[in-house]
Length: 102
Image (cartoon, rainbow, N blue to C red; front, side, top):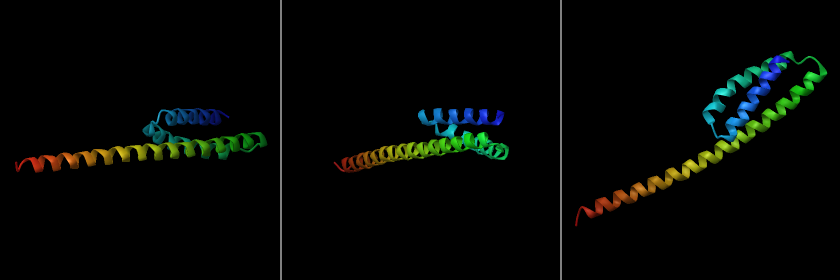
């Protein structure tokens, strides 16, 4: 049960990291959550604890789905910004190169 509480705490921290788009914290929590899941699976011997574990695993699946969606959206946004900067840089270089011959 103590491990389950710490798993719930880790999941709460993961949810907060997702909401804040703090992907570094989410990455750091990932290995801890994996270890806590393995321990919770090993400890789940009673019917009630198995039911609780199933609920936690569904919650974990949902959180990781949110994390993937959030990171893909962030990547797309950054990619768009990078393309814009690259295009602006090319335009500036073209302008500077063309103005040297006048």
